Length: 285
Image (cartoon, rainbow, N blue to C red; front, top):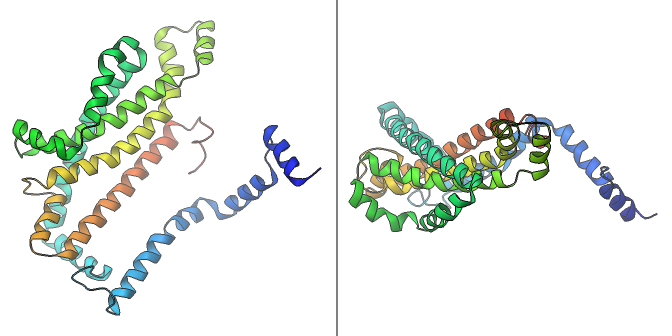
């Protein structure tokens, strides 16, 4: 029997093929720490190449300052308190908007997920609002709420609502009907079905929505802080643009990237903790 046929038979029968065995063996040799180090290889190489090109003068400092220059700028702004103050303001705005958006998106998602009537009454309107770009809605939001904190938190909440809503509905609708039938046979009531079957089954999709929402929150905040802000990371970038401080602009971009990595790490930690029972999430990732 050929190697291809043996692989197909092993795959169809649910047994691991030789290629998957080799992949698992190589992964186990690397270990979790090795995989983490490998994930940072490309960013570190990029920074090294960037620094080298800047030092030999192949990249203009006015166009793209060296990473060492950006680090010195960060240290200077941190010692004066400017950077930490703006970072704290942006984090508070993002946290407030994320909490509001999550509550609204999860509430609407649960309602639509459990009720076809609610889907008919709500879903089309939600999808229409979701299709409106941030920049198109921004003038109207400014007319409604001005350019204060309410406008910024509202835009963040608006951006967060839709990923949470869509993935909550999807998670509830994807629960296996056979599991629900089994629960009813076992005598579980409606609340027990929700707590023991529907919620655990929908949780992977909901947490995926949380990861998307975290990224969307910062995108919305960047848009919000470019208009009428007097503090925040977005304000710091816009102020630096006026004075052609490309080192500060690069610094704000790096900060957004690092915050995104940290937020995604928190979401992955939640997945590992809340989905420890799930075979695809229980193992270290």
